[in-house]
Image: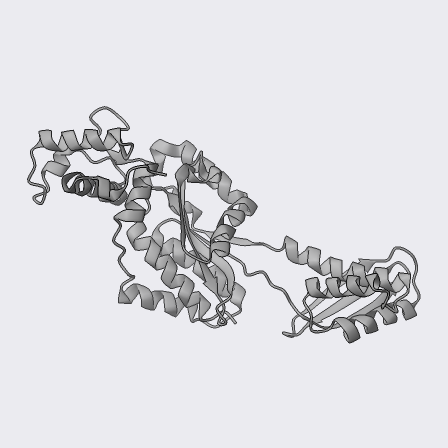
Length: 347
């Protein structure tokens, strides 16, 4: 985090710093004093500009990658710019219409999430990411059908009509009456609850001595509930699209950074955990480079925003990931608008 604040900079230093950052974010290349001297708004000599650049460099806000190569913002400089100087530009009417049109296409929510990830990638020129909402289906009915003395088919029907089948391995041969007792218990006592709620309710009944299930039936119910809970935990938690956008012309001289970033994206669980912090904060989050240890090597930035369902509950996070020279002023409001648009179609 930068120790210098915007108010500590002189008007001249603030303006030159802004021009350097905006020039770098636009081109991906360091900005030299000759380029700045050509800006009519500055009305400063090249010597005066070089003096200010040296001052900004001493404050840790700018850096010179090579001798006489111009200056570029450091991660601390980017943080100062994003937090204190950036003027965001709302998506224009054409961009808003494109976002709403693509999200408005009929289909399951999984398709909409795929669309969002690709959409963010297309609009930002980086990689788009969407965390899949954590589905917590509520039980409507569960039937246990014997397949053999050692195996049973568990058919779960959610309140939303979703049906899933799973094969349960039985610890010992069980008569059909045990399967029927377990099914009846779940349908009578646990229907209308999520898997987590059902498991907790059953444990409470057993602890209080109120359960009328025998040991075999109780074990069967526990196995059934645990099977779906484990399955839900293994479902994909992150959709990433547009990794190819990260291989632009500026990546040629920085291929190790890009390779590290692509490795990070392959490890989706770690990236999902990072995005989850935006979910918990319930607000837009911007991670710049080594501020987060996950991207200490790749020097990447993440712009993430939670999205909500129609009741206002945070159900997931979406965003973009790319080099630190992302066009923050354009991408930040675009991510925010996309999150709000997705929220309107989430049930």
